[in-house]
Image (cartoon, rainbow, N blue to C red):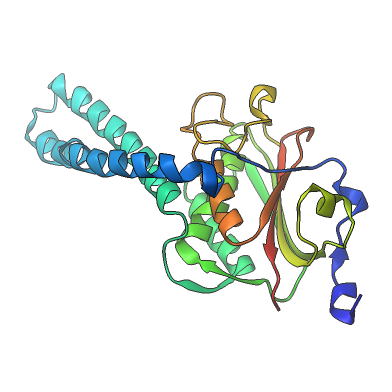
Length: 264
């Protein structure tokens, strides 16, 4: 083991509580045919959604303030926005990591996502955030937009699981996976990685979906979400030759580890 590997935290004995994320539905060999179908559906949906998303902005100002139609048009607008969000996520799922490959700082990106998410969830009132980078540099190579949304989905899931308050803990560090380690036997290639460990103290993952957590349309939010966020995260991390670990027995809350190859 060289000096660079020695300086990295070796992930071995601490791994026993975790499982390696897998999704047979999203592996390339199984997903290729479905992707062609979804591509056609999502492009058709774009055309159909255009009037539903845009017309309410023109209709609402022309309605009397006390018109009962006002609430109906608002409901149409909200429903259209939700469907459009699902459609955009399906398009991301189909196209994978389309986009130019660039160097990305995991620390800077994580802070940027937290700043954006904080405008949606008021941290100061209920949710406390503890982010601690344990490395000076955490540079990976990939599609910025794809990785941004991949990490954002995990952060948003955590915040939405803590509607009554809680603690979001984020650790960014280096890790080494040795030959013949438990993770290597599970299928993780032995090498140096950068990792983001995310844990919340929310209501956790429903036991009924823990085995299919990363499949499309499986929601961690008790039927409230579309169930595409973790699927997108899985596809993006896999395309970057990385891995996702999750703790099925985390109590309270949920815990995920995203592993990215460290080529430094």
